[in-house]
Length: 475
Image 1 (tube, helix red, strand yellow):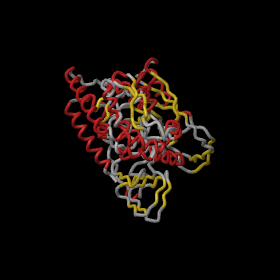
Image 2 (cartoon, one colour):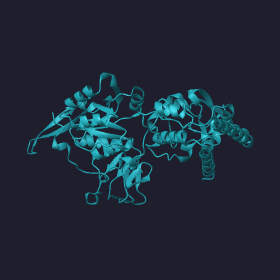
Image 3 (cartoon, rainbow, N blue to C red):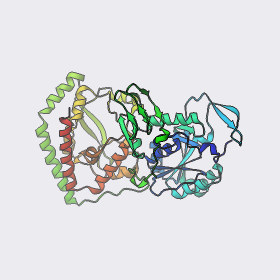
Image 4 (cartoon, rainbow, N blue to C red):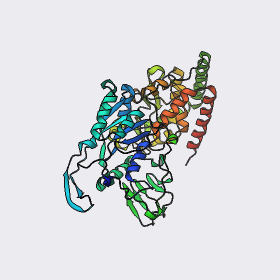
């Protein structure tokens, strides 16, 4: 067994954007508000991290946080032990065994499976526990300290599918980076100096990519690299930095990372006077009635277009939650094929959203009419009926179903303290930056709930009108 202090696993080796594979791994988790803390490896444990990922010195891992955050939100444990199941068929790999003087001794062939240590990590919001883990003499002591400091009632266990790699094995490090190239859609969130040359092709600002270079799939291009117009790069692929152009790496500024929701603290909505609520309801009725009268001539045109392409029904009704968690039928013009829900299951792996919602840039479920009415927001017009019925407001958080609202209880309770809106802060301010969509959704919904006012509603409506105009006249 190789100890966590083995110097062979601390060698930097080749870098991409000035970062070793281990540093890239840590930046990936930092983009999600999680600081990686390794047993036996000293490093500063920051105050601004929302979670700490406790692991051994050899592990590089990728897994989805959604279920873990859900468990932390509902159960509120001090420590969540995560058992990771890596279902890859590994076949075998070979490890070089060398002596104390670094001389080659032999090859060791390892068949299938993985070291059990690499399949177990922990998540905690407690900085104190992260410090204890880091200072533990060995891995067994680290787990024992967690059990001693967090009583059984404050500990939980969760099993998740994920990817686990050994940072001491060059072949596994490369597999890890190829996995990350596919999983991390926006590395610029925590790595400065990156430019997205095209969708999912990220290059350092000093790299040179000549016109005509062909990319297939996601690619990361290191600093100082030059690609001529005849090059064809097939991803997932990492092109290392040119060593002579390797950039210096700045310390990660945790306080500048886009925050995710703090699941440990309830979010208090802003209290509004009864008169203000009555005025908002009156405004909703007048605005919705006016909008319906003005747009009613569009209804038969849209309905005929839907019928000619894909038949009936003309409208799509979906269960959403409103004030206090009461469900209602949210009405929209149907923009997708009739079998959209069945196709959605097949497209789950292509989901570009980082949270419970589903989003694809080029969603194959959309009809031709649907693409147009989505782009111009015409599909949203029937929701003014929901406003008149009292289920929605003109301005508010995005209406979402019960299944999506369960992913963070404090956020859920806050956003369900007001009616959902046809438009809102998230609708007009979102960037659709890959890897941050869910965080932006939470951020803007919470901001609206805490700052709701008449002036904010008017500003959002004006921004919505400008957004619709830009989308409508965009070629």
